[in-house]
Image (cartoon, rainbow, N blue to C red; front, top):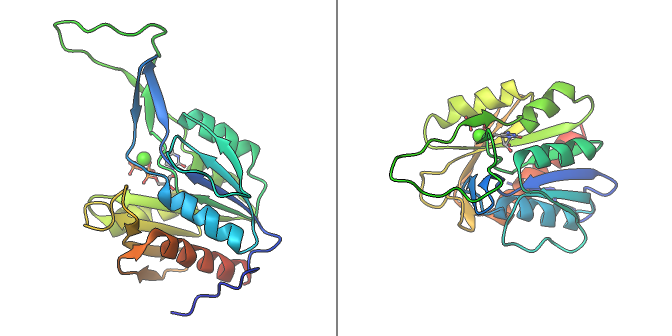
Length: 222
Ligand code: CTP
Ligand code: CA
């Protein structure tokens, strides 16, 4: 496949990318989080910069250094990610590679919770769905989502594509070898709102980033 990755293919375009997990505090020393290294989102930010885009990266806690030249907005919780995205949503393209926690503890204890002999329960309340909210308010903007699934990849990905009003969604089965969170590779299928479905072999995350941004360029130019 020929990729249209002219160095300046995204010149003058503003991109907002989210990456990494979020953390929801239980007490000062404990939290609930998701599996996510941030590598996919950071790879997209790096390649987008190389293509000339103006890049804002809203990132949950990761161990990766942000590429020089991106505007980095570090966040911790899903609510913080929601607020940062809403404050910076006036862009041409939003790519949501982050894995935000869907729930948070109903209360955060201000003191460390001491263990007891009994079992314990944590009541959880729902976090806002950032991408769904963006899909409800978007006007002239490209919206790209990710879906990491362990089963029914196509049905779940198409459900999210429609429910969140996306232009396309990048789906992967995390149970497949080579498609996990922490690795440098991914095995993705892109479902597009135009009805097409494109499956790729196991690729480096940077190559997946190029494929995603190539599709962005194509969609911006029609
Ligand atoms: N997403 C988001 N805000 C959330 C949860 C998810 O913006 N609170 C975004 C993710 O960044 C991703 C897409 O929605 O681009 C799909 O995330 P995923 O967790 O796969 O889907 P959910 O809708 O949360 O459904 P579930 O976790 O039940 O599969
Ligand atoms: Ca989720």
